[in-house]
Length: 469
Ligand code: NAD
Ligand code: UGA
Image (tube, rainbow, N blue to C red):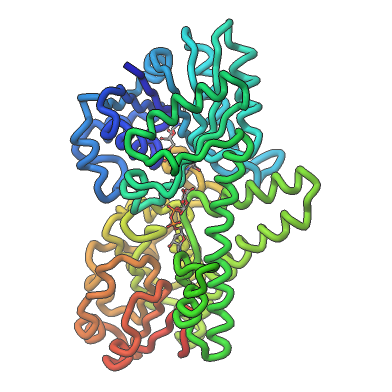
């Protein structure tokens, strides 16, 4: 029986391993983490992350061939294949601060693997890491190996939150990079066999290590670049009277461009796009490629610009001040169908409005109040760390209240900002909402989800991203 151990029970480790366990009943999969509350939650009825379909998969396998444990060393020692899926946030201090990936968690996991291993292992990079990380990890492992043979593979993960289970069941591709030596190729085959339980073999791509590592950063950079491109167009649409949805539709019909990932928004969020692009920028700079670095840096700059532009629009539309005005915030997660708030554009927008002394009433169907309060009282450098590793600063947030109902959030409000595209925001009773609001009542739709004509008919003043006013 093959034994798999995954270090890191987060958004990637948990769902990925649950799906491997489900699809490979003869493989024992143990997910380990040093953060005990997370392990307790994985073993409870309230999983630590919200992801459609995840609960069913976990319930089906947990206790059979899927286990969650805090006994990290024991399970790593027993495994044949060790996935490392720890967080790799942006460095906040020292060389490369603000750009380079912080590999502290990765390195400590690698050292621990070397320390506890008594048998040969395949070590799989699941975390997103800078290109050439495998070389560093190999050095750590082989210099501490005491004769044990380690093969390093790069197997980056391409799932998106909110659709993780769907993406894992039916991936566009699985990418496995390894050494070109016979041992490296054998390790690739072993991992390929795991995925081949449910992924058609022609979708399992095998490359060298560096191509696999770089492809992950490149994929995220290309995806984020599409969003910044369409968001840049949205500003031009507003200035010219063009409608960004019509422009996206028109350009997306070109099969070379394609229709996906062209939704203009208040900006992209999530734990990875920004961090991975900054990481790419840093690698380019370190390799003496400043022009390439600057090209990618611009994707992040446009994203910041889009959030600032949104805040400025809210304040300027509401007669240049939001001081003391109640503003309802619809959605705080970085996208729908997740409770994750890492790098959510809602943080920047809310902090911008709070800076102008607005009173915020925030409603998100999945994000708890404590999380929102913590995010808004946090210094930016802390935000890309996992929640339990963040230092909370004592900034007061009396201007913020969190409610569990969109109607409650809007009572007596002057304006509504839609910051996450939750489906329920499309079908709210906007007449009822309008009746309970101060007049004029504003809607700032940062996700282009509402029916603008219908809301204008009710009496709202509506601002949508990239659409005529
Ligand atoms: P996460 O913060 O949710 O989970 C990481 C977990 O690793 C944490 O629970 C932490 O306690 C644990 N950990 C850290 N050091 C450890 C150690 N030494 N031993 C045991 N456990 C340890 O992170 P995530 O969102 O799952 O992301 C993990 C990696 O996958 C990152 O590199 C990220 O860039 C990449 N990735 C994330 C996504 C996503 O959608 N979130 C998608 C693709 C790739
Ligand atoms: C993204 C990638 O899509 C995954 O392939 C990748 O594995 C993952 O990052 C990662 O490496 O972490 P994720 O961040 O979970 O996944 O979610 P996306 O669907 O990519 O959305 C990211 C952000 O872009 C969200 O804030 C979303 O609202 C925004 N977005 C997305 C837009 O503003 N417009 C779009 O057209 C699409």
